[in-house]
Length: 181
Image (tube, rainbow, N blue to C red; front, top):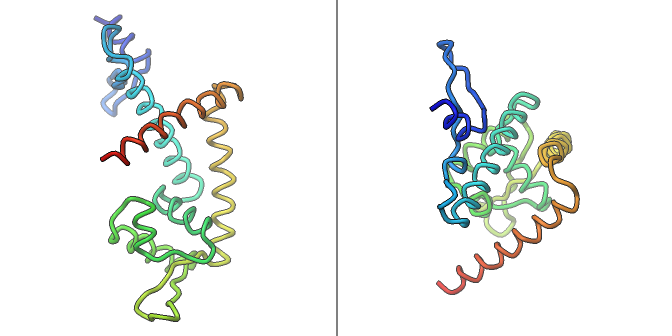
């Protein structure tokens, strides 16, 4: 039994608060050899994505006292220095308008973003990074890139390039499926 747990957890153990050791089980390691390759691949991609995202969340919180959604919103604004409307931010970040409003309110209070009214319609406004927001984001973005490099360091440049190529093929295939529906 211990061997099966060790195999299914890759030997990873979590120490809970009560002093007990608990195996860490992820979905992709539970798939057996007779399962479909596509399912194993999906679960492996999901496991890797989840672990990287959790690590980035932790590092952003510990080093910059910022959440991943706040970082993501600032990243969107950095890519669009002219600013983005709230609805566009919501669409790009795939979250509700209420979430965007809450994050924007906090960032505005900290003077990292500002709302700018549209000259055509004063009811419509865009959100832009302030100078302080640009400086803060530049520091976070540099650290973020270094973290990603570190987390991906288990692959060679050639392996990364091949993986990018394969995932691009998959993305293209999924786009074709979307357009057929």
